[in-house]
Length: 491
Image (cartoon, rainbow, N blue to C red):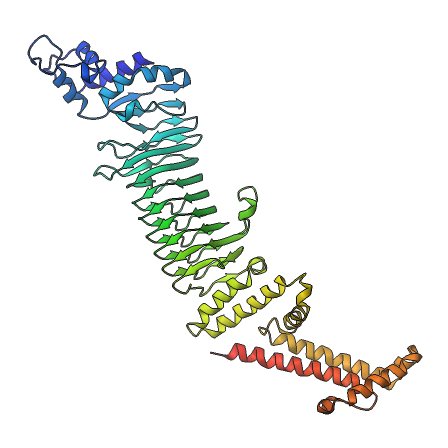
């Protein structure tokens, strides 16, 4: 392995020589195998001593290419022994090589690498220290396992375009890095697809753009974003942001997301979720605690959250968020499953955002959702039986004031029932079936007759109690009908 590296390096350097130059292969080899502290640059360039300056100038012209080699763990010892060779080359580009090892030796942080059209079969760890002469760290590479980018203060330079250019990726982890350059750059025909992207403890200066990607998970932890997070039209199973700061826009416009969680984050610019489709994902891709939730826990938003035209197929949780501006929910749609799982405090926040701008029609719809969420929350609460009863009646009578057709249906149905009761009374059917009930019926009719204020609701003699009962029901349903119509007509 060492001989192959040395042979390719020497050949690449000699190819740069002027045809009239007298530089020999032995001189180049001696330069590459001599530590810099062992050289004596006081020797004359025309004498018999090695011509260090000439070789150094050739090396610095461009990165040295290492082509079509296969590296595995058996070669790690040879690579570690090649420290002097690589440190003299300084800038090395691997082309069409295969890597079956986890990392390259660090060579005391003196060497800069680039990889073109290489294949990585094992989990690979690379440092983000890139030469000014490189436009990317990985170009056209294929990763059949994970790649992890660690430590490095990646300062922006004129030649740098991105870290990955047109690469086939699986899982990418960026840990403890200052990113002042694009992470990805794909040509138009490429269809970016990753199982997982993790940004951990990083300072992201440039925009992170994953628009149009297909992503399994996007995880951001303990990081600071000065650039924007662009995820337009991304197809994403799971998004998690924890203990991070976003100083620029976070844009998910037109995305399809199965689960989203912001926890202990600060967003000083707009969070744009316009036209996002939140859909239920499979438990295979989403953890149980993330299933069916769009959550914002202990987050602070200095600017607006834009939920315009969002379709919620999963629950939304805004209870523990702090917002300086009202969110925009114009055109948002909650599917049935989402309404059942969303809490009433979230619906109250949405309702108030519409009422604050005078949009009473939308506010009324979310008032009904708030009441329905409250009704579902009270299930099993025996200390709230009266509230449960009222909310249940209100739901079945008019969907919490949203339907005027439902109370009209109940009115028509009760009219038929009352006519049936009257017919049974006229035919004496009740007393024929239950002879001993006459005294009880008489007592109830007498009790109903004592309610003087409801006297107009009572019908003919013998039906006082039934007439009173139906009269109260009819009055309640008429009031529900008028209230629902008023809600729909209110501007």
